[in-house]
Each structure stands twice: as structure tokens, then as C-alpha cells.
Image (cartoon, rainbow, N blue to C red; front, side):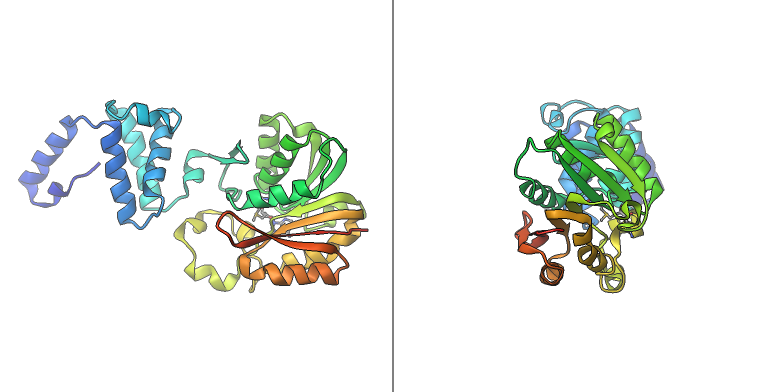
Length: 307
Ligand SMILES: C[S@@+](CC[C@H](N)C(=O)[O-])C[C@H]1O[C@@H](n2cnc3c(N)ncnc32)[C@H](O)[C@@H]1O
């Protein structure tokens, strides 16, 4: 960690360095310093991010830090931490890309630069999908389009042992991450991973449920997005000029790939929800509903009536 005194002249800089190298940094001091630094960079989750990175370096649970506030952090640990703080603060790398893991639906999901970190709002999609499969004991076939890290498929598989899931993605690199996650969670034998565009990998197959969180950010917003998104795969984020380039064909073609009465649940941006719901009705679905995320914004459109 640098200190402000380093900028006040050569002698002062040397003294500050000497003091600095002898200074004992405790967990709490490091967290406070880092949270201030992250906040100065405009990072909204400054304290949380500091805790995640320090917990990662010390190989402890984040809550453990609270019990160890007064514990000194040694130089080797601080050096490792410094590098992560630099990546977060200066390069704006998302926390999950730094630690390599993100919790989703209480599952640890491994993250690499090939996949989008699953977002908390996508848990609304999982909940909507589960409601479309009301009998937890019934076997059912599920298709997830654009599985990325596999987070949605894994959440569904963990909730419903009798589901048979097909998870697709245009990115083979993403599918490799998803497969690794499925193996790590012991559900790989229940998920079939297929590469390809939208419904191409499943051709004329039919399912009881189709679920998807496709890329839906408008290209026109590219310049105004948080810097963190530059570290996530563009193919996972952008859905053409207006963000609808995948959503629309996906919704319009979904019914042909559903068994009679099957369900559809898709995630979208809040301003897109009414249009997505409209396409569902036009395609012949009924019981079309919008679901809100935890922030109270329309985030998911669910519908019934495949076949
Ligand atoms: C928003 S991410 C969703 C990832 C994951 N399902 C989640 O919710 O965290 C969208 C995913 O769709 C994939 N994708 C993009 N275009 C696709 C296409 N034409 N067909 C299938 N998958 C596509 C991307 O590679 C990316 O993994």
C-alpha cells in the first residue's frame, strides 16, 4: 500500500517507505485503506470488494475476516493482495474474474474470461423456471440456450434431480467452463452440453421447458457501460444494435421446440420486457407474465403453452 507522504519529496519518500515497510498492517487496516481507495475510484461495492479480495488472498471465508480484524497480514500476503487490488482498482477487473469463482443460487460457479459472471438478477429466472415445472418429482426435459458458465443449468439440476438438461452455447470455450462446473458439482451426467447457434444444436427436438438469458445489451450502449464489462465476453453481452437480435428469434422459435403445454422463461432488460411478452403472445403462448428482480425491475418473461 502506498501512503500520501510519498509524494512530498525524496527524503520524505524514503522515510515513508521505511516506515511503511516496518508498519504492521492488520486485516482491518487493510480493509479500510482498500475500501477508501476503491471508493475513490468510484467502485460502489468498495468495502465488499476489499473483503472478497483479502479473503481470497488469505484463503479464508469472508466472514472470517471479521473475527481476525486485529490479525497482522504478512508481507507476502500483502504483496499478493496489492496485485489484486491494483487489478480491481486500476484495471476494473470484476471480482469474480479475479477470484475465479462466483456464488449463484448458493452454488460455487467457476469463472474464466470466457464466461459472463452470473448475476444475482438471473436467480429470478431460475425461480420462474422452477415455477413452470411445478412437480419436483416429475422427470422433464429442459433446454437452456446460452449457458455460459452453466450457472442456470446447474441451479436447475441442483434443485431437481429428475431433470434432463441440454445446455447450449455459441462459444465452445464457455461450454468447457460449464462442463467443468457441472463435473465439480457432480451433475455432469444429467446435462448434455452442445455448441451452436440458438436452436441449431437441437434441430427438431422438443422439451418441457426452455430457459435462456441471452445477450441483451444494446450495442448503442457500449460506450456508456461500466468499465468492468470490458472484461467480460462481448458475445455474452451484446444483442445487436437494440439488444433484441437474439431475444426475438429465440422467443418466436421457442414454441416449435416445446412439448404441448411446455414453458418458456427468458431474461431481458427491464425496458424490453413488454416487447418480449408481446412476442410470446404473438407466438401463441398463454399465461404470459413478467417477473421482477430483487431491485423491483421487470427482468424475466415467463409463458406457457408450447406445442
Ligand atoms: C448473458 S450470457 C448468459 C450466461 C449464463 N446463462 C448466465 O445466465 O449467467 C449469454 C450467453 O449466450 C451465449 N450466446 C451468444 N450468442 C449465442 C447464440 N447465437 N446461440 C447460443 N448462445 C449464444 C454467450 O456465449 C453467453 O455465454
